[in-house]
Amino acid sequence: MERPAGFWIRLMASIIDSIIVGLLLGTITLFFYGEFYMEEFNFTNLLSYCYLLFVPVLWKGYVIGKRICNIRIVKITGENVTVSTMFMRVIVGGIVYFFSLGIGFIVSGIMVMTREDKRSIHDFIAGTYVKNEN
Image (tube, rainbow, N blue to C red; front, side, top):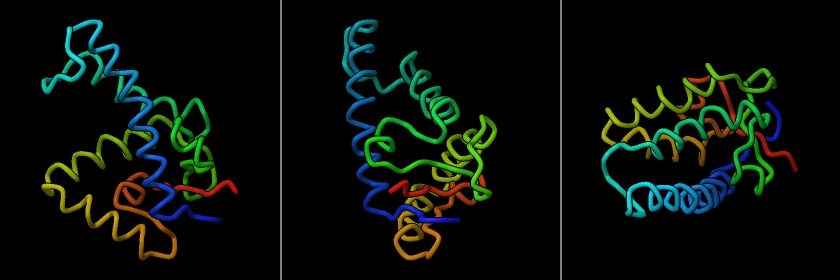
């Protein structure tokens, strides 16, 4: 693994991604449902999961926020991610965070801050890491 991306750049990429994609999906939700945000599961939630699962596969590990910050998700072997890799990272990792009542999410942040390889729980589940392309 070469040049792992640290906590702050990963956080910034997530914030940027959340703002851009959130505004886009909020606008779609407003158009279809008459509300910018809905708590119950709807079509735009499905689009959000599709974005997280398929865009990194099609765009060689990037999503919008990661591309802007020049970091990307790769397998620990250095290969590009696959749909199954992203499924493990997003869905299975999300399930772990959900059932740990958010404690796993906090632990993941600490892991990215303190570990030399900057890998979090969902990185270990999927066999990935986030690489700094600078």
